[in-house]
Length: 115
Length: 115
Image 1 (cartoon, rainbow over the protein chains, first blue to last red):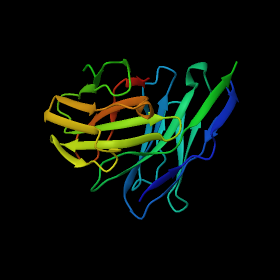
Image 2: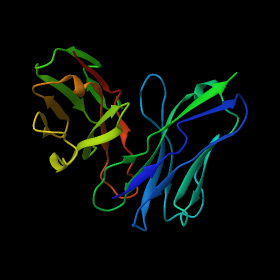
Image 3: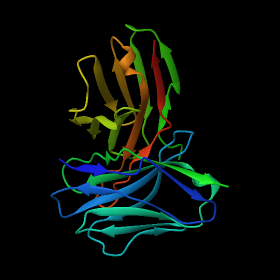
Image 4: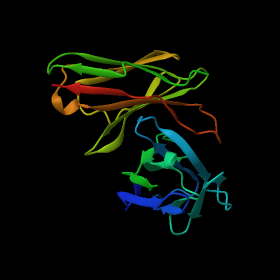
């Protein structure tokens, strides 16, 4: 079974600085998808970024980028120029490309932005 | 696009009562997921449907929980009888069943409190 581990329950960063959230996962599959979701206090789950495992290039969405290390099964999220609106819970998630379509989530990292 | 619509947003009920949560997926999405979020267990999949057919219900806690998807635009999650330990936020999500897409879009969640 696939598992997703987020070892940082809480992180904080100064506004305008850069922060990296860690995620590791375990799978025997060679192709899959990885995601970062953001959950602000409104509790809405919002997709931040996704990565296809077959792509070597790291995904980027504006201030958000990932460092995908397939061999190490690591998928970290980097947030540049942190803003107050980035304060939220961040969840890393795994999804297989074949078979079961479910998303398997990590336990989340609570990110605090310090003004 | 109105997104995934869930109702009610909040539900407070007494132990032993029946609870029905409702979800309208995004039009054209073939897959529908019910997740439960608690502090202790995080985000866990309860059940998911593909083309209205239940595919994986291994996360349904016990017989008190049931889910239906009578058509492509509506699903229900029912708890009967409810217990205090069922208190949680219940999320519905939908996804297009096409290779390469695989992005789950979540509703705003239904917060259930069982007294």
